[in-house]
Amino acid sequence: MTDSTRRPLPDDMSRAVTVRRDDDLAPSLASPWREVTVSFVVPTASARAADAVRPLLPEPELHWAPGLRRGTLAVLPHPAALTRVLLSGEWSIAAADFAVHSLDADPYTEGEQAALEDWLRGTATRLHLLDGAVATAVSRVDADVTDGLDDSAPPAGTPDGLVVRATLGTRVAAPDPGAAHPRVDVRLPDGADPGWEVFVDVATSERLGFRRTLDDDGEPYAFSYLVADHVDDVSPDDLRRWHDQHIHRQLLADDTRQAYVHLLAGLEAPVSVTYSG
Image (cartoon, rainbow, N blue to C red):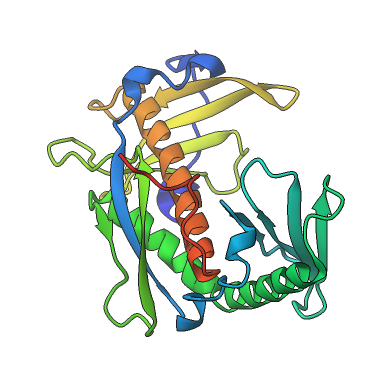
């Protein structure tokens, strides 16, 4: 944990600008959409892993939640499907439970169910083995796109495999080299009330400001933005814009992970995260 997140939080919020929750994401603060190409390395086994089940999955959405104890891997044949195919288990993929949940009486034949089960178990095994690679790829894409790159590729020395690509859309803005603070992170202060967030200049680790969530019985209703006392080149709108960027980086991370999970399973990146301009 850096010093920028250890220092005390402000006691006096009288200078803060408070914005109601419904007004926090002002369109004027939004950055334009960018198209980014992201590349991943997948094992050769991924290339044709879904061939046997692809006809059963018109527009598949795969959802992977490893979990500390009970993990799940579920696929919807298409986003509006009334059928869900699920693999769920503790500790062992081989012993995980396979089930088909559907409002249709018999969505699949016995042979089709067997093919789906084999594919899900193989995919779960691959995802378990490559969990670290997925996390590394998500961090790499976030760093590249935040640095302004429109193409994020694995670094040299990445283990052998097939290089596959996906085109994603994001509102993560490229840094402005002329700005006083080209790169700003939003961080949680160490050991503090989770309602606090701190804005930190990435290059200097300088604290630039704070965001405080105001809630009523746990339900957020407004946010207070406070520029740090010593800072004279930042406005509350800057803080709001940086927080908006923070959210878009989180969305990009989710989309990157979804794309990679699908590609490792032998599927195309899902329509829900891809971008066609």
